[in-house]
Length: 455
Image 1 (cartoon, rainbow, N blue to C red):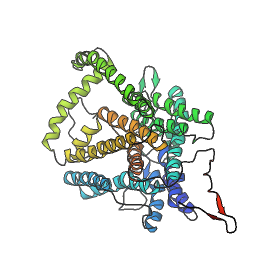
Image 2 (tube, rainbow, N blue to C red; image 1 turned 90 degrees about the vertical axis):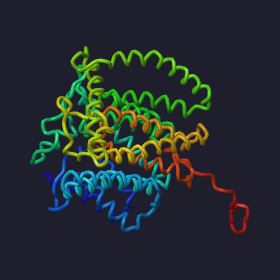
Image 3 (cartoon, rainbow, N blue to C red; image 1 turned 180 degrees about the horizontal axis):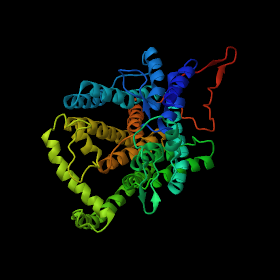
Image 4 (cartoon, one colour; image 1 turned 60 degrees about the vertical axis):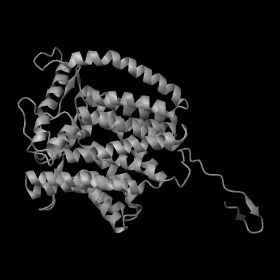
């Protein structure tokens, strides 16, 4: 039954007979990527890496897009940063293991990171396609969130358990992932971990708010439902870093969409300064414990992260340039979980990879901020930029305390592609709402021939 992975490949190939690659990307690749766990894979052909549901859906789309001479794509130097990020990971893995293992990681990273990133950039130059991609992403998030609410109370992961019963062999997380906090199961859905689920919804919820604001849902009530479900999906994961990041993101959206930024910025600066004066001394005291002397689980987690950074930073410095390899990082006693994406990347692939990753994250953030500030407060694309900034800041914050994995890898780089489109291109047409507005036709002035005046 593991040959079910061929199903998305077949669907993509059939749909490409009479549809453009961008249509199949939206209608096939995005659903299979988002709805099915990425840890189900199979070996189709000896000598090539394993194929997953999402990569099987992407392969025909990529082939068709290549045949069409990479339609819509134009090179930008950020593409080279992303390629360098992937390339140094490959070199680091090769130096610590075999070429075959490094080649497998290179293939997976190209499929998961580079190709979705540049394809979204190419497809979204048409702003209607950009809106459709964001629209379907938020709808998929709402669909998952509904079942995650059930998992939160009933402990049944419908995205994993049904497929697991059909799978003929062992898969990752085979014992099941049941994590409980405050008496509830932390819902993970198809995302392999509650932290990743929370991170995903922290990216989607601001985009759902934008779609609702711009009337991209069939009606207001349906739009409210989609927004609410994406927010619920975040909170039933019970992941603190994504929740805190999302709340901060709401403040960013409120500020960015307001026409009184100076007043709000002054108020927030004063409020933040006063809060930090009170919070920082208390946090230092709260964190100045060890795991042995911690009084609560939360305090023990803070102590663990502090000790983890102190201990593993020395390990990073032992091999600073190409790291230890993805599967050969030394495990220090009692600290087998690396609760930081940046530290994990530095350990596995070295500080050069971290540099390229931070260039991608921080440059995108700075350019999005510059674009957002240059637009009127009520401009649709400016408002989208503020929602992307909210999600982007959440991603940067979240990855400092937890890891990034599963579908959030693809989604982060695809949203980076959306941000690039906003920054680098000018919309060629009016932003249509779901009410099917149409532009006003120019008046006829030559009654005999029906010519129109064109400026």
